[in-house]
Length: 164
Image: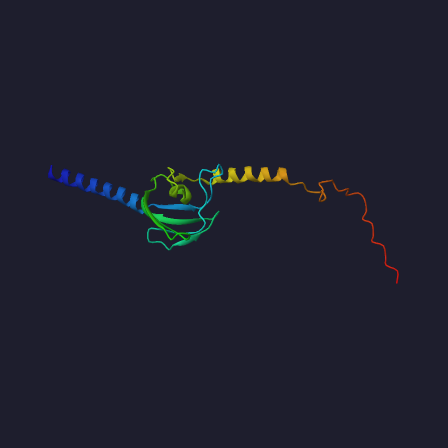
C-alpha cells in the first residue's frame, strides 16, 4: 500500500512539473504596434522607447511595428514617451494558447481594453489584400497626366530638327 502511494505521489509530481515547464517555458511573439486607429479613436505616438521585461528597448515612431519574443505568460512593458519624457509601466498576461499577439501601445495609453489581441497571419494578409484592392481602383495605368487614355498604336512623332 505504501508503495502505491509513493508511486502516485511521484506521478503527480511529474505531471505538475510538466505543467509548470509548459506554462513558464512556452515562447510567445509580441508584435508591438504604434499605428493609429483607422476610425480615429486613438492616434499613433510621435516617438517612444518600448521595453518588454529585460529585453533591449527599441524606438518606435508613428506607423512602426516590431516584434519581441518572450517566454512565459506574465510580462511588464515600459514605455518612455519622447515628447514629455513620461514613463508608463504596465503588467500584462498573454493567453497560453496564443503563439502571436498584437500589443497596441497607443490603445494601451488611451486606456482602451483589450490592447492585446490575437494575431494571425491570415487576418493581416486579408487586411493587406483589401488595402491593395482599394489602391488599385484609384490607379489608372496607361493614361496621361489628365487621365486621358494613351493611344498605344500611334507612332511617336520625331522632334523637328533644328536648322543651323
